[in-house]
Length: 314
Ligand code: PGA
Image (cartoon, rainbow, N blue to C red; front, side):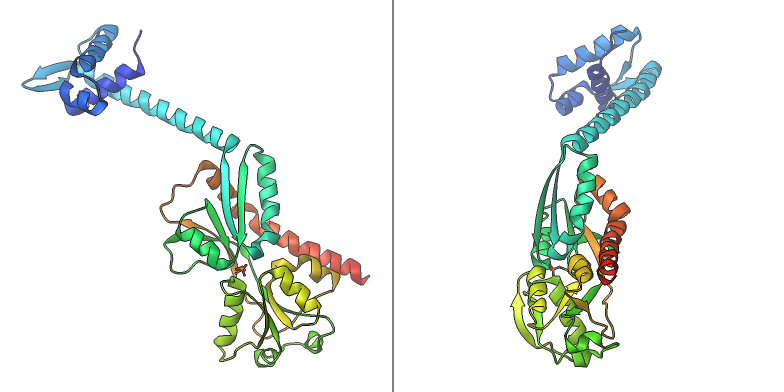
């Protein structure tokens, strides 16, 4: 039997429109070309597929059987093509991510596992602050964005992937370092080192104090988490950071997490993308990977810090 997919799809179009002319328009073919394709199909199958009733071409009984078979065949071919495209996607796709700077302490671990499993994938990673990530999210510039708290005021899909507690830190010889259950009012009398405007870390900590009628006395504004840590170690004041930024310094004892009432502020890492955005196969796969493994990666960072701290104390 010498029937082709082309003949089947032309026949389906004629049967749907009940007209050679309308099928020719839909398929961008001439009317005789459509007629020839259907004729060849009829010849191969040895049955008449269409009856002319008035102006309409209607499928015969055999024609209805062929309509059904043609649909199933073309659907199966389409599914096969989609599966092949997906396989190519994971083999040689590209993944673009925008993450807030505090996420750079755990995300590369997850990215490393993902790239090991899918070595052909090329990754572009933008690390910046919350405000800039929100702008990129609004403009749909990346496949996925990672933030420290849910994005507000944007029509996006956001999923919590792991805990993201925010802590206050001091140098271990700071007078508050040995105290417990320190009232926020007491903390708000100390000079503070804050991230730049647009930072989610700064926004969160300022909101906490503002809700209690307190303003943090800012000693210095610094543009990165590392700069905050170094300035706290340098004795310039107290700082606020996502706990996940502290894996190393917390462990070496160079920084102390303060026991302030109301802290740590409990937040959740979020992965987000614009609602309605078509995610590539690669983006879908990384999203699944994040949902499955982010919690574990974040905990692994905290565990490394605990083990190193215990080793340092022995
Ligand atoms: P950021 O991080 O301070 O780098 O904007 C956001 C966050 O942890 O909420």
